[in-house]
Image 1 (tube, helix red, strand yellow):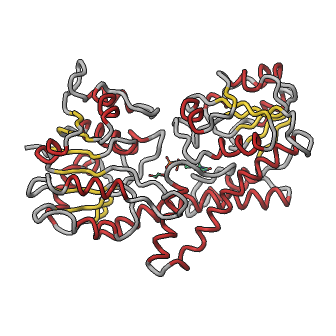
Image 2 (tube, helix red, strand yellow; image 1 turned 60 degrees about the vertical axis):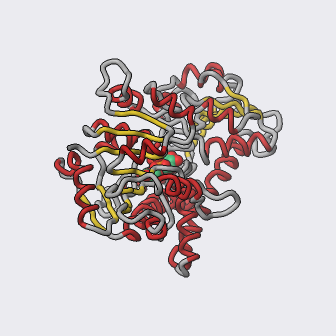
Image 3 (cartoon, helix red, strand yellow; image 1 turned 135 degrees about the vertical axis):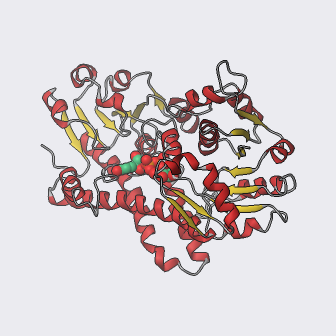
Length: 441
Ligand code: UDX
């Protein structure tokens, strides 16, 4: 008999994981404590923009015409407990308000609700990003006969479906051969395709996630630090990144200099990692992450200064600034800790008249920054602008016609905060193109 799987928490991670498990052939029951989310998911829709996810849900959600019917959703813990052989816990672990540490209240609440209803022999699998030591603590909350495994998730927003169905690796922290065997069964399809399967203990599994995100953040802040030096020395960070990236030990990916990283993961995960290391007495090992964080945050201010220079070097008062991009990265509608909105907000606070446009992030941006002005298209945002800031590298922005924008802008100055536009195209259309870490032409 095929395993029955439950997924607890249906945010980015959970909704994608639930759909992927159904795609792999399992019967899946997803739970969320927010009834509106369950209603939406039950009709095959998601409360966020993630390419391919609604299509995958429509393929499997019970009740949708032509679906496999393998995926259902509920708000009932009893139903979850009675149904599941394997329970994946995918709830959110945000940064605590005003602190670096991670807020474990959703994870704790999920375990408290699951423990009394899980069947004897069930396996609970934690996927949320948690401070090292959490699995050990949480396993003690489960009743006799219900085991815990830790299985961190590495999916990226914008590629969530593909990353879940075709992961680079599957990492599991287990305490028994039975738990390992069950997880090999769950991941049988990717494992058969050759996906590496790393079996380890709880703390190592938890640390893999924290260290992977720290490494990625370090790579971005490293190239941004090089951008700062390039700016001072007249070098070109894009060429530098290309040249060092040819060294396979360094690798070309994640070396795009610009206004830095944001989102719901990298910033809060490196902070939570520092906080946890401090509790363990290992804070010295991670002091470099403080520098990574500060290089990253500094980029936003530097973008503001570049914009100030572009509008004459003094005040932003009376200046019109077009901001292209609101989300923290393209192909997502997520504006959490978005560098683009942070820059837009700073300029507005300094008196600039900022108009923002984003292909998918407008609704969330309006909610978070209701005082910014929003336009319905890139062209409308740029109309009358003294300077154009390119802050999220959507394909739509790369495909814009600099000629068309030039005809409506008040001044043809574009600042590329993501090093993603083609300088030649913009310069040929009469624009002054400036990018972070690169010399002015
Ligand atoms: C990240 C990790 O990649 C993923 O493995 C983990 O599971 C969750 O956190 P995500 O937050 O979706 O995923 O975004 P990612 O693609 O990693 O980008 C993070 C930020 O870094 C974005 O703001 C992006 O614009 C920025 N970035 C990325 C750069 O500034 N330069 C780069 O070269 C790459």
